[in-house]
Length: 395
Image (cartoon, rainbow, N blue to C red):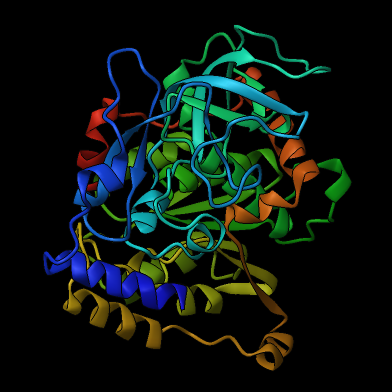
């Protein structure tokens, strides 16, 4: 039912039948120096993105603190840290939220919604028994509510920013690094000692979109977690050098090649042997072939479906038809066949962290330790002003 409503909303928006009323959508415009947030009024195009004033004494917050509300005024929780946000990251998942395609956002928050998962800023208020103090520079994961100048976050979801890291670099880290670390853990390359799993003889890894945000973290973290042959796939040839700088042992670019040609190069990069783990957020374009390139006991980890989605800023009837066709073409992995093949397909999105507070803390500790020791390169960052959020959704 949630998706049916999202389809109807995006089609009405595309047809020009659903324009948010100024007063109903955003309330009063924030004045100079007032706290503000950016919300998506309802599924649709970038016209549904609005700036709102955060009421005095309130903050935004994630759905693990308060569901279906965009403002928090006080809470019975005794672990919330108030952060004055200087930077927040804009991810592809946020575009999916705007288009009505992110089920957990619809289910856990609904519309209007203040999106945003990653923040960096300065602590402005702390609870008792907290290692952080007012004035500390921090970064963390909010579980939505991050497009804001003031947010309340459980202390377990925040860490101090190392001195050499800028706030904009820190804000770009949480979603991509947490996704990469969890993907590697469930694929059999855990960084946490409590999750120790014997890697076995084959320690090869294939990373799709190896020069991207999550892909770049996967390449680097895989090396830190014991992978011995990390092969990256990129779209354009000019991304090859960057992927190698991240730690790829070999890079296959798809530009100007047929699927058969570049998949053959993927096979050759691992000497004709299947991969222990393949990380794929492409969706229908590559999932079946990725599965077929696993070794015995190999694991295909799925964390997105980029090629299933339309690239437009709004969704027309034709967009939905294309996505439905993509859905119908998706491979169906049969449990009996996977048993016979000794292969596994695993999937996740970061919304599960709502109930895994200890795990997200452990992951953050690992990431912060590696970050402080300068064991990985930071993601590339492009800076925009807060009133340019709609522009970034069109890029």
